[in-house]
Image (cartoon, rainbow, N blue to C red):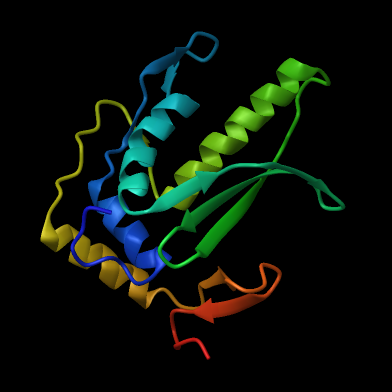
Length: 170
């Protein structure tokens, strides 16, 4: 990481990354609806560089379990081994590979945008990288109640501890 003071949690690292992210550009046109949209590549271009700079990796495996089919978006912070995740259901319109691929792409796009706190806007200017913006984002993150993260133990990868920002871990 390039910062001299490394974030002490995934939320602090995410807040720093968000302060440097630009909005996703709606640079594609849907000819059927005659509207602009942001494709997965545009979302990744807006999010991944800032997340990576602050030590956050993005994983998006497909999950098939008793609850259905999902794309799980995982943000993993290398410095702390903390992860946060969400699951977006796969809604498959056509029962073929094109339908499946389309559903996966939509789920990956929406999952990454939701987890990164990113929004799509046509011709959106890149956010300014300012100390004031970082402070505001960190303050907002710290005030969020009862968010949990999973911290993997170095000794036993199956040992998960729930942590909360509202109180220090045990």
